[in-house]
Image 1 (spheres, helix red, strand yellow):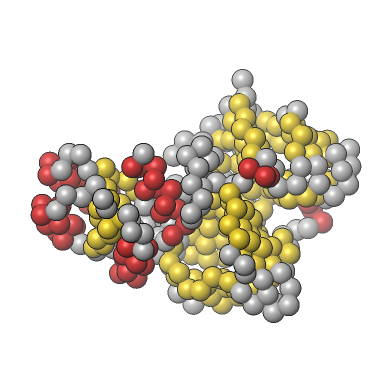
Image 2 (tube, helix red, strand yellow):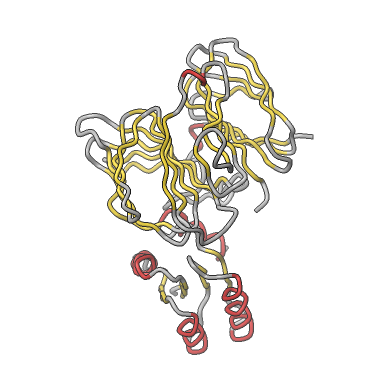
Amino acid sequence: MSQFILHKENTRGHANHGWLNAHHSFSFANYYNPERMHFGVLRVLNDDLIDGGMGFGTHPHDNMEIITIPLAGAIAHKDSMGNSAVIKSGEIQVMSAGTGVSHSEFNALPDQQLNLLQIWLFPNKKNVTPRYDQQNLDVEAMHNNFQQILSPNQDDAGVWIHQDAWFSLGKFDNGFETEYKIKKAGNGVYAFVISGEVTIDGQTLSKRDGLGIWDAESISFKANTADAEVLLMDVPMEF
Amino acid sequence: MQTKILYIGRDTEITIVMKRLLNARPEWKGICVCSDDEAISILKMQDIDLVLLGNGITPECEKVLKAHITGLKPNTKVIQHYGGGSGLLYGEIMGALN
């Protein structure tokens, strides 16, 4: 029988640093909640609003798969591997930190707020060679469809990472219904509502709510509003 | 009373950052090293509450380190540190100590 955990938007951790207004679905930085440490290998889901021109100076990472999805605006990224790029809304960025990498992330626009999701997954292999990638998302394919944007496979749709995880993103018309089949036995799905209202396995979710489901083979989905946009993170529950 | 935390990782830059982060909190005393020999000599000389295993430590080195720690200071907790910076550090340490 499937199990679930519901994380309502207003139960997330919150830190407002002025230039950075951050909401944490799981414990992060000074937000510590022992009940909210991770969902399987999904360790971090941060919803950050960053003022124009502001951002995170050069800082290191290791042994983490870091996925960044700008929802509005653009990020200027530079790293110790020599990558220098701007990632805009409609794109996805992935960085395997592995043995260690330093990077900076700034709002690339001086006069527009940046909203991004930053997601960290524990890797399935430690101390890999660091790598970076970014891709355009197929926005048209996301209409009334959970379009795969990340997988463990280099030759599959979307970016790839060192973990048996699949991410899918969809934008749905009001009343649209579908089913999502979990990709691998032992995986669970964490659904994060970017906008609108949806019902997943009987649970009604609003903007920025999160729902984790495990011990299931599939989940049922219905959009309740015209602007429903949902990110599904299909991740191993054991690691 | 300060909690003494020993971080072991191979990346010098991350080690410097970890030292700064750990010692930024008055309740923690952070000692950060890149070499296992140095870590073991610190464990012999000081009472360490918590060991953080950082980046670049092979499974073989981890096994040797854990054997030394268990032999020298059986009450010292050993956990993995992921992420290389501030994001997960507080949660990892609070989780281990509580």
